[in-house]
Length: 205
Ligand code: C5P
Image (cartoon, rainbow, N blue to C red; front, side):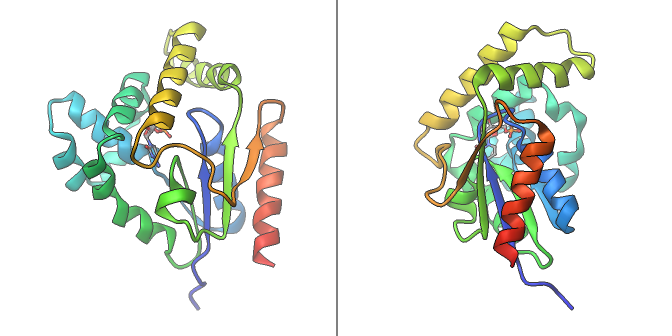
């Protein structure tokens, strides 16, 4: 028997912990998970290799999303630059909407899931933390992968992306009206996961 669609939308600024939370919620409930930032990163990476952004978005292949090279700060900046282009966003819309309403439930994390991609999502979370806390977490992740960048560089990167994502005309970063705002600055990941799981359980019962 197929289960009815159930969407958890997890939005928030760069390095707020959306990925960790989304994976934990998806695993807990057996939902599919789509990290929508990877779509923009894949387009950004292709632009860095000389391709046109809109063409890259229109012909995006799911296998390109697996590439570990998409995790670099350079690709993140390129992603936030292509993400302001309306035709790029439009080209990525149908895939995200279909994923959101797939049978068996879905968690999508990004910037505009609760506001644009799936306003009917059963649970909407807006996960945030101070820029300094987010930069510290991102630095630890990058260092674990052997990157030798420093805190000030990562902080500047996080702030530049925050500004670009919040100030753009198309699908700007902001909490949906009905989103639960989760500030994880002073929370452990376990606490944040417990809050998110509790909200999903409440919405399912
Ligand atoms: O989430 P992540 O940091 O991987 O996203 C990279 C960039 O992609 C963001 O800075 C943002 O500009 C863009 N993005 C977006 N909408 C989404 C997900 C990501 O505009 N739903």
